[in-house]
Each structure stands twice: as C-alpha cells, then as structure tokens.
Image (cartoon, rainbow over all chains, first blue to last red; front, side, top):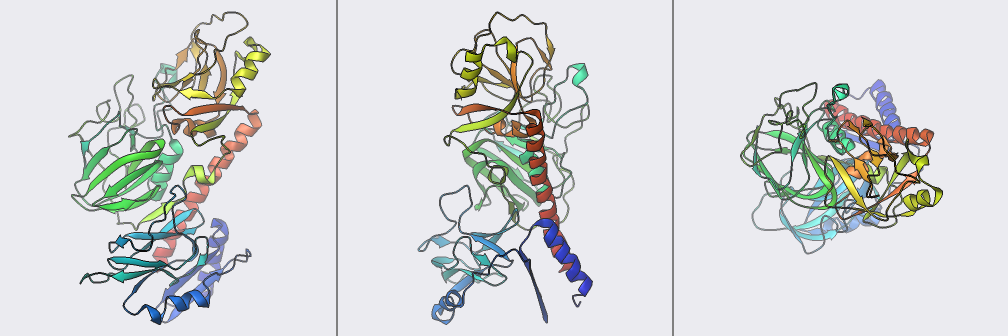
Length: 144
Length: 325
C-alpha cells in the first residue's frame, strides 16, 4: 500500500503531539523518514558504519529498528546492558532506543560474544543503525 | 490464570482504590504508587484502574498458566521471565508455563505486576483493591499466599517488548542523598498549635522511616515535635497523606489503608502528586518535608498528569504505527 500524503500529514501530527523527534518506516519498495525540526542531528556517522561493515566478516550486528536516542544502559542502572567480551543469548536486550518517553529494545540477533558496542549512548540512531557487533557462537541460527 | 509460587511480604491485589465509601468509614486502599500502576496499565492498553499485584518484598515467584502480556513498574527490581532479564518499567509477553521471578529490589519499595486485561477478582464496594482492615476485596481480603490462583481477564493480542521512562526519571526532584526523599506538603489544621522553633525543626529535620511503616501508615523517627500546649481533639475525618503528631512527638504519615478518622493533631499533609514518592520510600530511608503552597500543589499534580498523558500518547503512537505496517 503506497504511503499517501494524508498519511504523512497524520504521522507528522502524531509526532508533534507526542514530542517525538523522528520516525522511519520501511516497507518493500518504499521508505519514509520524518524528522521534526528540533535541532537534533543524526549521529550515525559514516565512520561508525564503516567499522561495522566488511571488516566484521563472520560477525552479526544488532541494529536499531526505530529512530530515537540510543541508551547503552537503563537510566536506573550503572551497568550497560552488554559489555565487550560478554556472552549473550539470541533475543537478549543489548540496548534501548528512547523515543519520547518510550524505551524500545534492541535485541541480539544471535547467541554469541559481544565484540563491540558501536553506537554511543545518547546518539541519534535510525532504522538499521548498527548498535552492537556480536561474534556468533556454535550452530545457533540467527533469528530475525 | 496466575499461580503464586512464593511470596515474602504482604503482596496484595490493588487497583487505584475504593473512593465512594469513605463516608461509611471504608478507607480507599489502592496502590501505594498509583502512578506506577497506571503506567503498567497504559503499557498494556488496559483500563488504568485495572487491578495489579503490589509486591513489597522479594523474592516473589509466580507462574502464568497461559500466554499473558504483563508489565512490571514501580520499584526497580531484578526480575526474570523464563530466564530473560526484564528491565525496569517494562512490558513483556509470557508463554503458558513461564515462571516470573523477582529476586531483589535495589530501588524503591513496591513493585507492580499488571497483566493484559487486569487481575479479575470480584469488585467489592466498587473496587478490586484488598482492604486489609476490613478483610475484603482483592483475593479473599488478605495478602497473597503460595498456591493462590489469581484469575486474569481474557488476554488479548500479543504485544511486543517495550519500556517507558520511570516516573521518578521524568519527574525527578532534587534530593540531598540517595536514601532521602523530599516530599512536598501543605500545612494542616493544627500547624499553628506549634511554635516557630518547632516549625523550623519540623522542616529542617531528616525523618527516618521506621520498620513500623506499611500500607496503613509510616511511623517516622526524629526530634520530638511538641505543641505549645497539649492538644485534645475529637476524632475527625482524615485522608491518606495526613501527617499527625501523636503525644510522643514522632510523626505518622497516614497511607492508603489508614482509618478514615483520627484524633491526633495534624501538622501537614503530603500533596497528592508526591504521595507515590512516599509509597516508594524504603524502610530505614529518610524523608524531608518541603512546604508548598496550595497553587504549587495543583501545579505538581498537573505535571504528574502531563507525564501520564505523554505516556498514553506515546504508547498509542507505537500501536498506531504497528497498525499502519
């Protein structure tokens, strides 16, 4: 279903009402990104994306699936969700994306050892922004 | 249904409270942290008055007998569902047979478990809240015990994992130290029966929350507060939040299970917007009182409402986007 102009208008109104900075919607054949003009800047720099790229051979990447600010730790916790060298299970939470008052989870796509936390806490991330690089373990198949 | 496997303190079924029976001497009961109960219900798309479980002590374990959406709000707890760690103020989906374990409570004093549709105990006098004093409401009018089976309303669609910002992050207030909670109060009926030096003492002291503090009331410990002359009053109506000074000069804050009347002089009343902060203050912790004008108390309430409004809009936004996809 194509995104109509009226949909965009409605989404923009929802964003404004909710105090949310940005939204990204991706569907087969189309993608939509709305960013409210609040002075926030996208921090997903090309350099960071490169680190997460081809160098990481067999690594799997936990990615954000929504736009907002990345939180490596819950505000009530001193320790981040994951640290390099730590073993994590597929589906485990590796960080949060803060959108308004919401905290959306970023989950590990596979069981493995955390290689690096790529995103910086507080950075603006978007759909597909690499967050954590994981060295997968054993034959556990990646989940989507 | 939910089966209680282990419970440590007086955990109970609570909704927002029983508000229409006060004139008959029936106290409100209801969640000590109503903001947390509302947030849990908002996360699940429930009526905000849906009943949840108030859990004041850990460890606590229960089993879901079917797929159930649930949320944990209130105190910061270390909790796991089927081996997965649950962050604070979080909603998740339990599968039939999953065991929820709440191991420790490093922050706050009461954790709230809400479930999709709410805990479906019978409504008594207009509320599902447990009335400890009258032994009715909730589950058989008593604290939960191992083996108890709690009926849940029919569960609806499955939900995705999602958290919200805890109220005390959004509505943060300055505190002198980590174990001290500052609560705003308005002065009450007998305030003028205490002299200026006593007023100053009341405001500047840090009041220790004694172990004799619970859903009925908090007994505080600190310097002795004495009136200019002994006060003798007949019993009169009081509300949760009232700070009384009994003859021993050690303040009592009346809480959700308080009697509806009392005769001790009242020096101040905790404003409604801060009552949940008292409900989350830990035994052994400290309370300090900050004098507030009536208009500022209303402004604080508006700020609390604005937080809940944003939660509602934000959670609705997520569901709308999901529906768009």
